[in-house]
Length: 141
Image 1 (cartoon, helix red, strand yellow):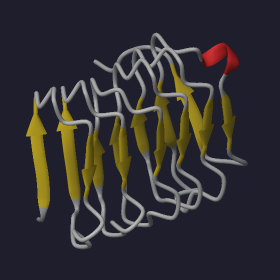
Image 2 (spheres, rainbow, N blue to C red):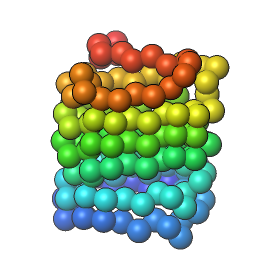
Image 3 (spheres, rainbow, N blue to C red):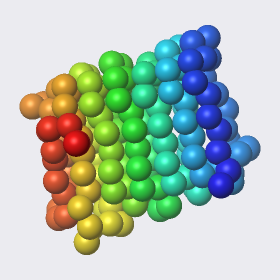
C-alpha cells in the first residue's frame, strides 16, 4: 500500500499530491491549518482521512477505488462531491457546516452507502442518490 500520513501539522496550509499518482491512502489528521487539498490526480485512492482540518470543499468525484472517507470535525467543510465514485462509508461527525454531499452515480448502488452525520447541519444538507443510500445519525458502537 502506498500512503501518506501526517498528524498534527498545524502549519501545513496546502499540500500538492498531484505527482503522487499511486497514492492509495491519504491521512492528514489534526492538520488544523490545512485549508485545501487537490486529489484530482490520485485515482488509486482507497481511503481518505482529513479529520480536524479547515478544508472547505472535498472533491472525490470519479474515484472508483475509494471506499472510506473520514472528515470528522471539519467546521469549515461545506461541500463534498462523491459523485461517480465507489465510496461505501463516509463519517461527517461534527462537520457543522456541510450543506451538500453529492453521491450521484455512486458505483456501489447495489450496496449501502452510509453517511454518519452526528452533529452536522443535516437538516439543510442535500444528499442525492437514487438507491442503496442510508443516513445514520447515531454513532457506531
